[in-house]
Structure formats: structure tokens, C-alpha cells
Image (cartoon, rainbow, N blue to C red; front, side, top):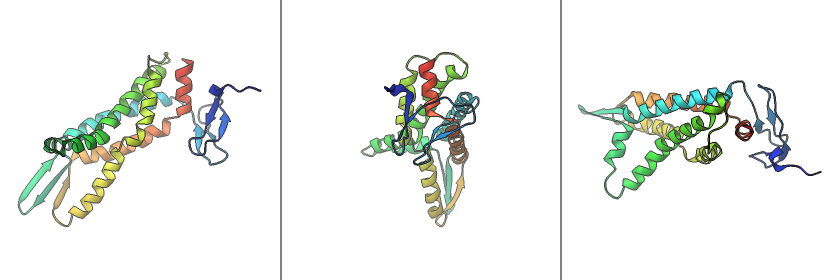
Length: 204
């Protein structure tokens, strides 16, 4: 019997193939080999992903320009934002590195949020997907490993522990915006069912 490849779903962890099927909201399909969740539709999940993406973009923009931290030692203090640090290293041979780091921390996460909003906004409102929605969602998925906002905040926390013994460090609103951003990203990911999104794009 010939099977249409469009009816199959592959486990992203162990590459096992299964025949995809539509599930009721709240049900999950998992890989019998490794336990990876393959399909997990949730009620109004598209709307939740769009809402969390908008929230993430607002937090990210605020985290760029608001003060990130203030370092005080021997009566001197310096307050800095992520944008200010990037501009400080925007000249000379280190400029490409500063641009690359800023892209990984800021530009890619904002792009992923925007791509998800573009893909899911019409679907969340019961309308056909916009033109190039499949391409935008594919780019959002491919760029996910390179969006390093979470890695940045973990690295910053480690650095702050080491700086604590040398100077007084005061955390600014941008630091807490990044912390909230990590929670928002985790909540957003919990509502994302890749197969459900691809199926909605193709059906609409």
C-alpha cells in the first residue's frame, strides 16, 4: 500500500516514522521508541503563541535599551545597557564580534517572535495563512538553535557571581526583563505543536 509522505511524521530525536493523525485538544501523540512528543494540540494554542510572541518582543525591546546593570566600586559607578555596550564596541576590529553577539542575543529572538506572529495571526483568527507563511515558520524553526537569549542570561548570572566579590553590582530593569523573557519563551514553547501548525498552514 502506497503511503502519502504528507501523511507521515518523523520523530525529531530518533527518526521513527508514524502516520500522522488529528487529535482532540489536550491529547498528545508520543514516540513509542524515545517518548518525544510529536503532536500536542491545545485549545486556542495559536492565539496563545501569538500573545506570548508579542509579549516577548516588548520585553526584548525594553531589555535592549533599559539599564542592564550598574557597577559601583571605590565611589565610582557605571550604568550600562545592552545597546550601549554594543555601541561601545562598534568600532575597530572587534566590531564584527559585537555585531554577531548582539544578533544572537537580540535580533534572532525578535525575528523568531515576528515570524511566529506572521505565521499564526491569520490562523488564530480562522483565516487562511498569509503568503510565505510556510517559509517564515521554517526560518523561525531553523533559527531557534542560534537564538541565545537564554544562554546570555545564564552566562551573565555566572559572571555576576564572580564580580560580586570585586564590586557592588545592582541589577537594572533590563536584567529582570530578560528573566521574564525566559519564562515567556518557555510558556510559548509549551503551546507550540509543530505538526499542528504545518497542518493548519497546508489546510488553509
